[in-house]
Length: 186
Length: 349
Image (cartoon, rainbow over the protein chains, first blue to last red):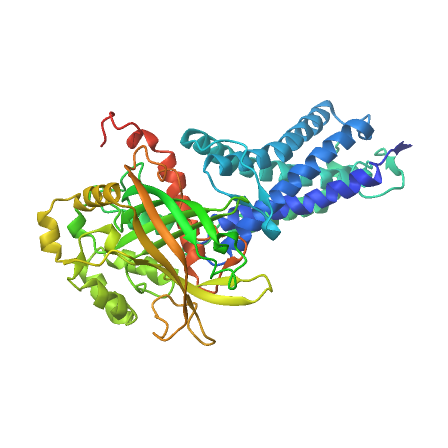
């Protein structure tokens, strides 16, 4: 038995893969820069801040696009717990894409650091200096960063599970324009 | 999906592949974070190395812990504009926030016990750019690399280790000769402060000029021995600068030294030849002193990589290392505010 599964729109797919690259780079740069005192610390920090702002903008665009165009339905035979995990993890991912950069921005603001991106672009502070807020946001940024990485690993594992084991078209909905065909196990 | 033992077996390769992908990603992440490299010099280690055996002074900067805030202006004479396009070198007056400090991890150290005096400086320009700098009175730095600096911090904890370190690091001699001199001054206002690290000025035409800079005091130095300073009390310097500035604003000339090709920009232990061209770009005027607990400098990290457009880091490895370590110190101390209360009326530890 075969069944058609819709794909995400081209714009959604481009956004997804662009953000995938940015966010993975971002997470690696983040843990790398805070554990080094080498000269690369300075360019890594600028890259981290610039990518963070880029991800925030892309995530907001993506949220609007998602609300406008939606997502292809999950396969009808996907077990309920998996469906729930899929839906919940996507809410969490969107919340983190928007929340973590905002928290980072707030954290730098609360430390009274000038926020300067690539090319000398200056970004205004969104909070006044505050030791309390800085500490709170620093911890949130740090732990949510690790949580996001864990969530992304689960996302990749699930995507590969759909691609290699279930072969149900869910993975293809983010990779190709053509309608994917899902085959029920015999 | 109905998962039968047969389908599980046939999918074993796929499950293994998924496992490998996830393990490789997690491993790469752990490696990048330094979890697999206990030998990596991290900001955490550098900052921890400053702490005395009894532990760090909570709530305070982990080095240069004793200090006092000031405000004032930087009066730019316009002569730096040919060297750097930073707005701070356009003729004019720009607000300054700063901090005089002693190079010690102990906020209660007696003035006479600390050879290194420093200044933290922030100059803001109207278009929104901020320049921060942290400078000290020593003309050269003790060691050439952050790794060696960490070694120095560790070695300084025991005399035997220090002896071995000195033998292995002849570049210490320049700093050592300065540090052992007994002609100290009795005022923050009489000290020169040196950038030590080399930076790069970029002008409007895009020309890059490696530089170092220094603040040259207008106040003549009245020398004093450490013993004489001890007799004046443990906090003499803060009292003295408060009274002196109350009576008269204090001035320093900001002098930029231009490197010539081949001058060592990556090694702050090496002074540049005396005949290098200097450009005096303006005057720092310190107008008001404020105690640190409620002062405006308290919440500022004088990170030397916070630079306006027109000033960049050079191949000197220290500004990046200092930036990383200062951030760690800032993160720690701002989480410990309760140990260093803000109001003057509260009890200080």
